[in-house]
Each structure stands twice: as C-alpha cells, then as structure tokens.
Length: 355
Ligand SMILES: C[S@@+](CC[C@H](N)C(=O)[O-])C[C@H]1O[C@@H](n2cnc3c(N)ncnc32)[C@H](O)[C@@H]1O
Figure 1: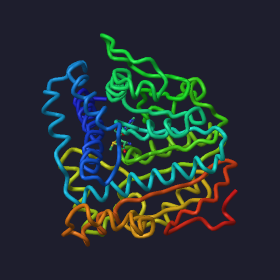
Figure 2: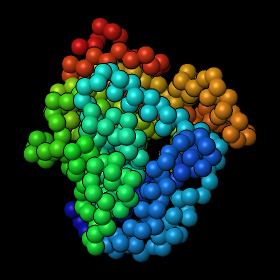
Figure 3: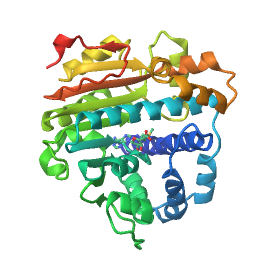
Figure 4: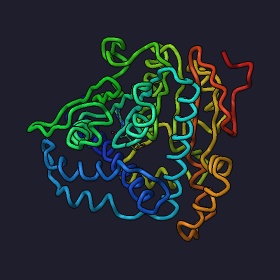
C-alpha cells in the first residue's frame, strides 16, 4: 500500500471515529430537550472534559469539544434520536424478556459513548453480560470515564480509580469494554480473540450506525464471524439507507461525503425485501425490517405521543417522515433462537422460513 493511501485511510478512520461524537451530541440534545431520560450522559461529558487532554497526541481544547457537542439540535434531529434510541431500547427489553430470567449477553459493535450498557446492567444485574467494542482511542476514553466515575464503576463492577495512564480496556464479571477494529475480524480465531464472550449464551448483537461505515465484504465478514461462533441469538442493525434514483438519498450521501464520511453500503439494497433476502442468505432467520418512519407511526402512541408533540414546535413534519424513511431497523435471529416478539414491522420473513 502506498504511504499516500495509508494517510488517506488514517484520515478516514479518524472521521469514522468522530461520528461517535455526532451520536453523543444528538443524544445530549435529545436529553436536554426531555425527549429522553439518560442519567449517565452527564458522566460521559464530564469524562471527555477530564480525559480528552490525556489522549496521546490530542491537540484540541477539551472545553471547545464539549461546547461543540452540547449545542442544541434541530427538532427533526431530536425526534430521530428519540425514535432510534427508544426503538432499540424496546427491542433490547423484549430480547431480555424472552430470556425469561436466564442469563443472556449483549454485544454492542462500535458502541462508542453509548450509555445503554449502564441502564441494562442496572436493570438486569448478574443476569446479563454486556460487551462493547470500538476503536482503541474510543475505548481508552470510555474506560477512563467509567473508572473515574464512582457511579459508573459501581454499575460495571470495578473499583473506581484515576490512574496516571489511561486504561486500554476494561473487564469485569458482567461488563467488557474491548478495543477492536471490526474490519480485522476475518482472520481471527474467534474463541482465542474473544475469551470474554460466552459462545453458548443467547446473544443480542447490536450495530447502531456502525456496519454502515464498512465495505460490503467487511460487513459480511463481521456477521459471518459472529454467526458461525455463537450458539443462538439475534442481530439488530440500525443504519441509514438510500436508493440511487431517489434525490433525498443522493443529498444525504453527498452531505456525508462532504464531511469525509463514506457509507459503502448505503446504496447496497434497493428495498427492504432485498435486505431481508441478504440477511437470510447470511444464515439469519425470522427477519423483521422497517424504515423508521413506520416505526415512529406504529410504536409511539397515546400519552407518549402527546408528550412528544408538546416538547417542541415542529415545522418540518413531512421532512421528518422523509428523513426517517431513510433509516432502517433490522432484526433477525440465528441458531436455535425462537423469539416470537410482538413488535410490529413492515416486512418480515414468512413463518415457514424460520428454523
Ligand atoms: C455513529 S457512531 C455510533 C456509536 C454508538 N453505536 C451509538 O449509536 O451511539 C459509530 C461508531 O462505530 C465505531 N466504528 C466504526 N467502524 C468501526 C470499526 N471498523 N471497528 C470498531 N468500531 C468502529 C466508531 O468508532 C463509532 O464509535
């Protein structure tokens, strides 16, 4: 590989890592506007203030970074963050309920600064093992934040501490935060590379805006590695999607590419049915798929919808629908899992295709 190409890849990886701050920033805004409740996000922000300057080679002011990520977002973004977060929470809850009191495992790919692990550990205690993977630098920051915050340290089950050097990973009985570039998974011996993953537990694999940054063949490799190693469970994928002949999709892709963000699979599937066929081809069954506009319309109702409608004045109702139509929520099961959830989806496998 030429040195020039290497520099380009490095730069692109940096941009991809920085998307974690975008996701965090959206959640902060949704919390401040009372769309979401998240008692842990303040610790993540404080952790950035404390630990960003400790990152090797960090050049920017931590205060300036924090100021940028705490700027309020437009109502359209707050709504999108609300439906993304609550829909995934609903699925996680349903998966946990299906385990009916038995132990289960969650593997969050590219977890970034997400705080869902803390909520799940508080709720399910020793019944759950929560794994988070991300690039090394992101893991350094999160591990230092957890260890330096007594409330988070207690939730994951480690002693609080502030060490001179940033912790590279964090492992306790019920929580594992590990550095991993998912694109390297093809060549690893799974059991050796992931000694903390219990291959026998029912496992929910989460990819919340993560696989979309990889090339199609890398996505296939990540899915194949987990599916062939784990006994049973489900995969949840949330990500943007587009179709080439649609103007809105092209504008979305152009806007991202102007920021240096490539989404190699954005145009991979022309519709939900081809995505369903792909997931079945990868060995998944009981596939359920929707765009997020459908999810919003069918999963949010009654007093919660009234509450949401009172939070902010919405001018862009049609635009919100259009934007949500360009995000997909995919849920699919593998192995012997037979989880008959009551969740309403737009497109789903025929019952006779289930194992
Ligand atoms: C948009 S953020 C989403 C973070 C989190 N899942 C959420 O929804 O709040 C994408 C995350 O995926 C991570 N990521 C992207 N490609 C990755 C890879 N090849 N290996 C590990 N992590 C990756 C990024 O570092 C970043 O934290």
